[in-house]
Image 1: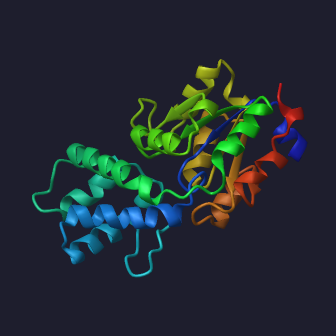
Image 2: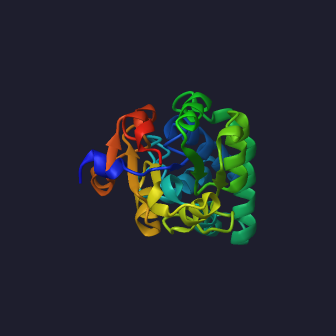
Image 3: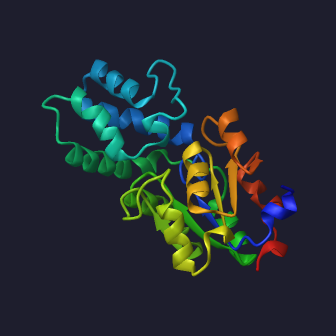
Length: 245
């Protein structure tokens, strides 16, 4: 498939959040540590066990591709962590606690990959409609949007708990297309993980784009996508004003 063929007819872009809009290592490595430390209540060995169970190596601060902390949602993380915590807290309650901690502590660590407001404004000026779909909570997504003044540029914001299901299911893409009254094949999904590509495939997106600068990009992710870009700003070389219907 040629570049022109895969670009044709794209009217909207659905962005992943972490690793795509936000630098994963700079933002989430310290956040993972802060949440694990708080749940462990100062027990450093327990905090290390929590990180390890989630796929975050506490010795190297490398988060494994495909791990719960790299791609999962808070419910999945709570299922991993509950058996390790004193009293084995209820998974649903623990997931809510984790979400609250991610939101309350996340603004201090969030590092955007570029000037997101400027990038979104430029895309909107080209006639594209924009959304965010994340396996973080809806509250976490809205906190990011508020922190970086993105609300005016967005038509859709969804987290794993917004009622559309979590990635890799197609629900967030289906809901985004329905909100815009377009078919999913008019949407480009832009992300950094296999879950993002799977979302695009399951939902019938017109284009699955992977950002090479995202978190722990690996050959499997790149091979699964339609297109790979080096930086988020390179989206302008793939979706141009001429492609807007």
